[in-house]
Length: 285
Ligand code: GUN
Image (cartoon, rainbow, N blue to C red; front, side, top):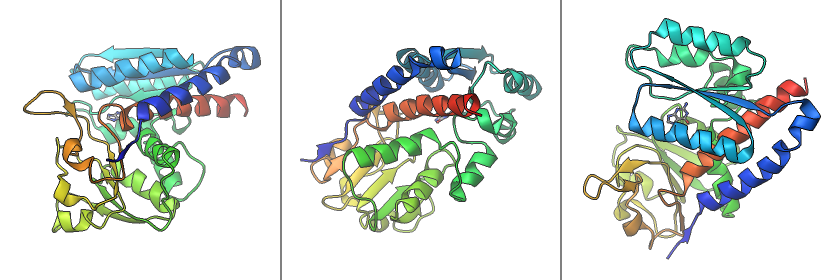
């Protein structure tokens, strides 16, 4: 039996704290923070994330505008929308939901967002500042994972952490945040030799590979803490499932995040926090 790390509950309590804070902003600053989310196309996963972001904004008292565009939008038009939002003083945060259609260069789009309004923490300036340990906006999922580990009283310093996945969104930044917490971090990926041998060394295993139930019980050490970033459909049951075989690993782990209700709600919660931080930096300049 392991401790189930409840991200939904933690996100709810953090959102309540933020809502109480945001409720004071109109009097203090004349308005509330404004987040603009751009959704290109109809990918069902992306539509669901964007809906979740709008709902959380409402809960916290943040103004949310969702701009929906056809998948056929040109890169030029998208860059034009971003330029307008960058110049718009009433906009504090800009998020372009990824992935984008193949004819659009995501790196170019991310770099076009003003670093001060980059609530995702994906802009090259924020990425550089993360790796230089300078003040920056942190990517939401990695930030949420650290909050979950701390809330669950998991000691990170000195621990062997294995991160499966090396994406710019999760794998790389969470590795750096864990390194900042003085963990010994191994980044494993699709070309890692004898992956199970590597993952069995982990005191803390973070899985962000995007494959349903990829991590099986034989890959996990007895007593490990397991953080599952995956959001997949189980090919058999069609239900939402993580990258980890939860039923098989839960009895072996000391603590584990469920899917849904683990990392996902924390990502959205941290997006709200980042939007407030961008707003406050602007207001307090
Ligand atoms: N697609 C999947 N995760 C994310 C995220 O954290 N931010 C954005 N913009 N797109 C995503």
